[in-house]
Length: 60
Image 1 (cartoon, one colour):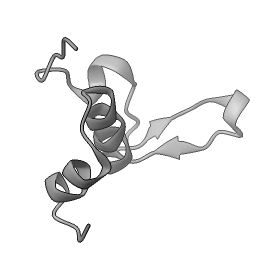
Image 2 (cartoon, helix red, strand yellow):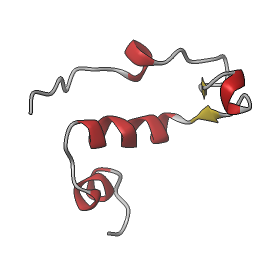
Image 3 (tube, rainbow, N blue to C red):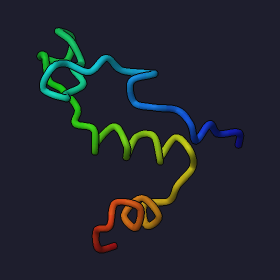
Image 4 (cartoon, one colour):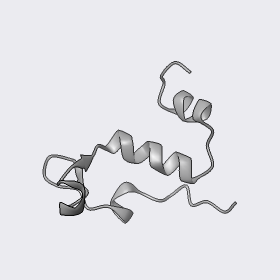
């Protein structure tokens, strides 16, 4: 699986002044945090749940 580890959150999502990534009206104007965006990025790069947890420095 080809990955681009240089991909940044702002390459995919627009960030607002609060550092949040709004999902828009279709999603009740909810937003994702940078940490949630990082998890999505790691999953798309093929990381396992354990490796994501280790990357986030949380217990797995």
